[in-house]
Image (cartoon, rainbow, N blue to C red; front, top):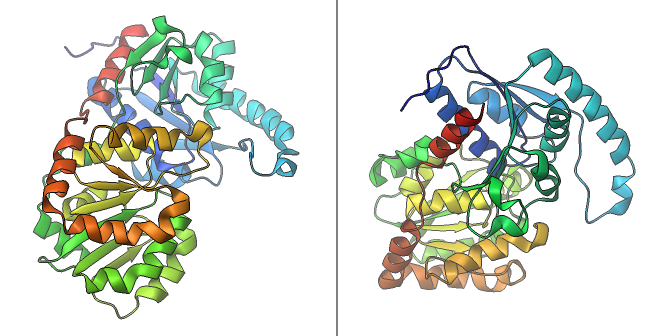
Length: 368
């Protein structure tokens, strides 16, 4: 049933840093707008991060704040953190007071903390979406005063108050859910051969050094085995990958695939990090996947995510430290095993959730 709202509701959506936070945020906004067409949205993100580019591309306004996360690898880099935190609270107070939202939704990433914390101090209803199997510290601190916490799976009461948890899964972009692009059309889009097995290599929205280096080193062998590659490198590795693949047929190189529905449609096999959003999309795309978990993720949650699928014969996992030795050989071996390819695609598809965004939107509208 559609919600009849007396006046246009105003929502702030806070968070970002990676595609894993940004795309669910946009999916939630789109679902709320569908149910409440007059609703007004403002995103808040971290200056210099990818949300400042991706959110306006999706048609929403965004304001940036000066904030940085705690650096686990270099304590010296945390010296300026208290100053940035104070500055961000001043910026947030101004933005929130001017916009006067009816609700604030946090999707993770360090820019979400000061926004939700300030909203809670003003008595504004707050909602949290936790996309991972291990909750982030910020979300755990904010949970006590949040109205509802949307989680990807059961068992999250070890992090959050059980009474506030709603298990929804992860919102996935509608372009992925409703993807009706044919394989041949997608391969033409990338300028690739329709008769070759196609490998989609996506190391997360920011790229993955270990995956890039393994593909770089094994590229000639991959091409010799009649495979072809759509290689999303991230910005840091782009120039090197372009140089490596120059004048070679069967390689499409880009730093970021905006039209990922084409990427999934073209792919016969995917190599991917195992962030929560990547997994949510891959389950719906129904592709055989080799996961290479990012080893420095908080509480090693990417390995936990990947093992959850491996246990269900819904994916293959190679540890980051073994990538250079095992990835290319593992890829070639999998490409030659038609039975395994079908098993993996069938089993990962069973885990897909297509309407998480709608469930979240309904829960939010029922509370405000």
